[in-house]
Length: 379
Image (cartoon, rainbow, N blue to C red; front, top):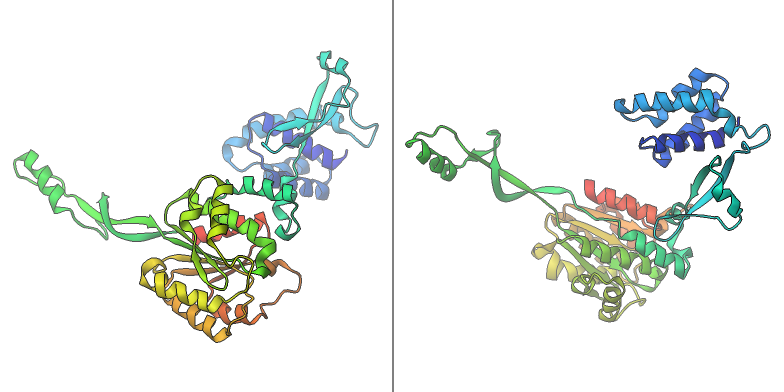
């Protein structure tokens, strides 16, 4: 039996039965099946049980579908004999731009639609997975537009912090008495405090500050990054955005428009040094003096999207990074060149800033930005 086709068919049957079988579990099952083979029924059963079943309540459905497929219908996917059974038609379904299935029916005979005995097996293929791991620098214009739509699903959420505001709690530990509510309740019972009320510090998300390098060396990635920053600003409050080049430009207001194209155009008009030189040190000093040290960066998560190339003196950048590190909660540096084979942070700007960076991550693809979202959420 062809193990690859058997893996796809069995995983599809489980999904039809109502089980949540993600792509990663299907791939793991295929790898396990390639190791144990398909001759030993018990080995196949436990290979699927270990990779496809994630919750105890899924076991009963898995057992039923396993018996139906492997004991009675395995012949339908026996590609080592004469291919698929004559009563099975294989349809290749693509994901279009809206995410819906678009089966290729151009080569099908219309008479097949009237045959109720034909079982149609749809195998889905999507170019989005390829697009997720492709470098932004190699994108075409159409791929940039498709990536912009996918970025709408990226929600940049910061980790939580303790607030000075307090909220009611039923746990007296690490809480203080809520005298006002306790007395108010006591008035209902003749002045006797039958139930004591407490207040505990509330939780609120940390502020996120994004510093985007818009210099000429970042041109292959700036288009994708500015769309990511715009999606972050629109998705929630508490996100501030700045452009770094030969000077510092605040672009939060321009990126707040929900029309992505209009927001990016407004930001481009606002930033007069777009695709110009790079002076990270003086620009970062302007941020610290005007906004950062005064409160915007205090306790915040600062995300810097830059390749680290700097025409200024590295000692200025190191000094300003040290100032920023003293007030910020975490500094995350996103470098699109980090994914390059053999990369080392040898640029003088990157080398000067790296000692003050808490997280040094990649940023060359959609998958890297998804990982960045997770990093910020746990920072």
